[in-house]
Length: 295
Image 1 (cartoon, rainbow, N blue to C red):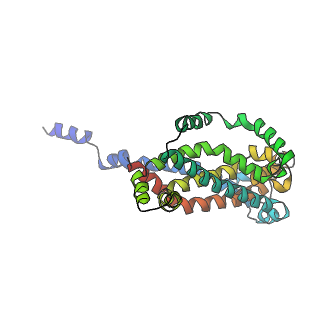
Image 2 (image 1 turned 135 degrees about the vertical axis):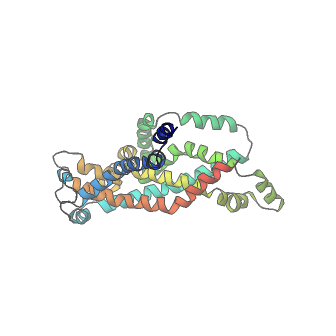
Image 3 (image 1 turned 90 degrees about the vertical axis):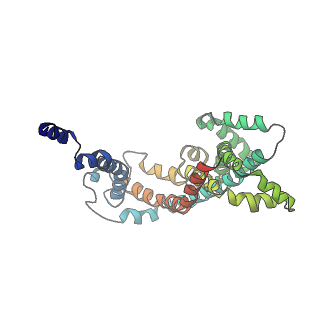
């Protein structure tokens, strides 16, 4: 009997083995994930603070610390590119929210001829990759530029219009589901009280869909902020370039590339996106959680 008890005690999991099976294995996994996500950021920051201008100094992180690269940004067109990027990103984000919300509200609340084919067409159009439209966009802007130069090649307004048109379908579908989760009875009660369509839309519905507006605005800003291909096609002259296009020129030639300057510019360029994400985070989390419980 005593031998059987000893065998049972050896087979029974100890406190340490239970801790390792339930919780302990998560620590090394978390360490690997943190290293995987943080190391590129640390490497870029080290390159930005190194005045060697190459990536070879990455073998010894923070071997030398200098702010020469950040100071050298003032001798380039970097801050002009920052202003162009903020203008394009901000206008694209604002326009995407306004246009997407109006289209989603119309599809969600009104019943009109062509509603169902319109939704289906938007869904089908989004299935085509945007790369197939590059040539069409270039030819269209070239033709428009002959009539209205503000809408032609090398115009930020033209680039903003391209972004708005390309994202309208996806944004409409993204907002359409959220608008459907708002009870129609709110609109009907407001109509009985004498509210106009404009008052119902701006004063009742828009505050209720703030989370999805924040999500769409953030995604549109990030998409326009980091886009390179369309911006490279539309914007030709250096004074009109965005950050993605301008900074690429610093490292496009292997013989003259300056990775230190590029890394310093990348560190500063991450700040607007980080600030916007942190400021809208509570709306994004609230939208996801509320959307998960609505019928």
